[in-house]
Image 1 (cartoon, helix red, strand yellow):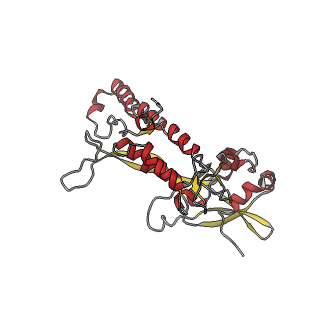
Image 2 (cartoon, rainbow, N blue to C red):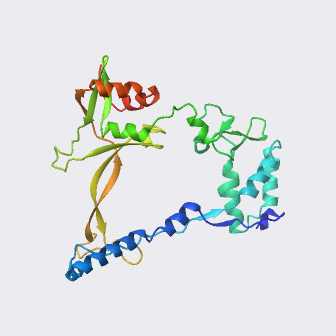
Image 3 (cartoon, helix red, strand yellow):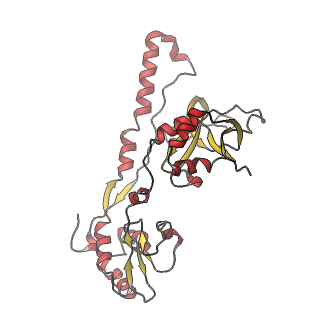
Amino acid sequence: MATKNLARTAIEGGRVGRNKWERRYSHTTERTSTREFCDKLKHDPDAADDDGFFIKKKDRVHKEFNDKLGPMYRWLGQQVGKLWDEVRSEITKTFDTRTTAGRHIVNDHLLQSVEVTPNPRMAFYRRTGDDNTSYYKHDFYVNGEGTLCQRKYIPRRSRRQNIPAWNTNQLANWLSGRVVGKVGNKYFWYIPADRSQKRHHPARSWVTGWGNYTGAYGDYGLTFMYLADAPIYKLDNMGRKEKNNEGAPIILGYESQWFIDSPNAFRQSRKLNSKELEYWSSVPEYYQNKILERAPIVK
């Protein structure tokens, strides 16, 4: 409930949207496992005594609440053009910091939105190359004259305006766990060369994907995934791992999962044939460069 008195405005906005989805679908694993268990019992009643077959517990979802920050940001936007010292003094009069909600609004949101001195945390949102623009909608700062200013907001989708449209799923399937590298004027396949085999670990079967976020490899590009068995631990009522007499977690079984990772190295394979070169030539240069960046550099 918003009121004219910001100190009395309710900021509790219930759970965040993501947390609502997680809570709603947290029963999926348990329900699916229950159906599979009941179907097996229909054909084999003795399966209930099988230690390798059990009903998986539902995923534990912790509460994550949202805040209604619109009134606060609108109030701060109305102060643009005033001296920051005067605005800072007005904050203590407008917001009641004696309450937990007031302290949370002022210390965790309002003051954190104003960059009084260069702040690396806020610089994360300004990858536009211009200090007067920001990808963050509520980015305020204090200029050299001590006046409160607001940076111009640029929608994040505008970052991809220069990226050509292409079927990245088809491109990732075509790569099939490999990358393309250039040696001179010729193109070669480069396949993952895992060191895990030398250490007597199972060989990884790699697949490629194209995602919006690829960690250290850029904001938009090629990703690698491999399939491996992940342990299923026995959990108590609090969602914690139960341990045996030796202090080790109790493992009920294993299930296959896809893990995002990067191969340790690549080794050169055969040249691209005429059909593969034809498709490669049709791929826009932007995507070609993203793939060539992952291949070893051969001088």
